[in-house]
Image (cartoon, rainbow, N blue to C red; front, side, top):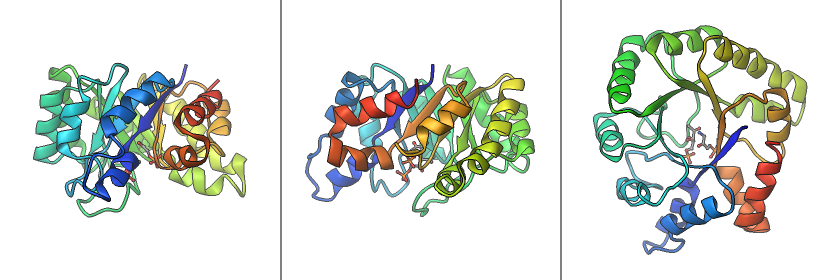
Length: 237
Ligand SMILES: CC(=O)[C@@H](O)[C@H](O)COP(=O)(O)O
Ligand SMILES: NCC(=O)COP(=O)(O)O
């Protein structure tokens, strides 16, 4: 079964626009779970332009499904994750001022750095995931670093999908097969949407979890949050 983890960054973006507490990010997380989300993802960035470090502490006792914290492993981020102890931490190689994630790790160059981090999080009992592209050696080095899972960066799939779905998914199927062979769990995310999720899942039904934020929150403007989550879950069956 593939779990749907809702990334609530964009809910925080809207809240931050006025400086108050509307929408209430914590309540939205609770409601996402009530509507069927099997996880909540947050990606705190150094400028706190959406999810703030304080939100992460607030959310921890409220999230009853799976809490996934994504981000670049700066000292502040690692300290936050070790204090909050989510179910899963996903390491993403983003620069501090990056608009959004736009690549996976070079796991070969960063092998020593990532291995050390995997050890730290393992010791704290937190499942680890490394954000990677579909380049097979990058997946193999993520396994060498000791990651429990990888998260495939799906933006290249999402951008090619409207023109050529088959060509878009082929590298992801190949990468997903390697992940399975190496005995790691498989996550996927970035720009997944109601338009492209079902085809992705039909081709890679063994994906453990997808984390979806931007498109899902946009769809919720039209469909409402409950119906939106139900529609995304239908794509995963
Ligand atoms: C790793 C990843 O693909 C997502 O976490 C994405 O970066 C969401 O972050 P933004 O909401 O800041 O775009
Ligand atoms: N890990 C990907 C994620 O959490 C959400 O990415 P997006 O759907 O906002 O592009």
